[in-house]
Length: 126
Image (cartoon, rainbow, N blue to C red; front, side, top):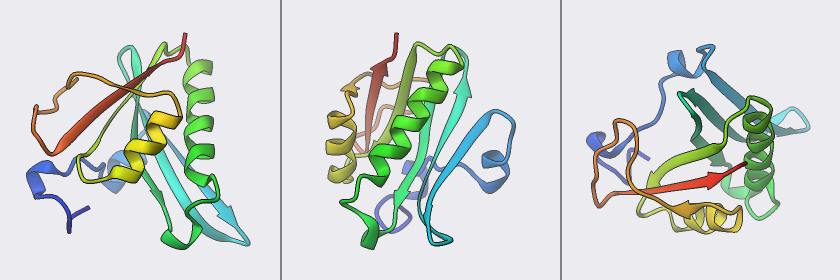
């Protein structure tokens, strides 16, 4: 992400925040090798998807979709009616994945700035 976006356009969570009680962090692994990961930050009234990554050699196997599906289950179990996310405008594969998963474009939310480098999406869970 640091190669694609400026520091002001990068909204990744630090390791310390990823370890917080308010964050769910999932990994997909095979033969003790991590192939992908995703986080969900528990916000007031919604879950926010953060840090979805899949190793390039593991792409096309449904790993990212499986991680998002599991986060949806956790969000529903937590009583959240909505999942939201911010992703970079250059991450076209991510846009397609989220659209296939039922996410729609939305306005900026939370503390995010409305910049051309960001795409905002959400999915109603209720």
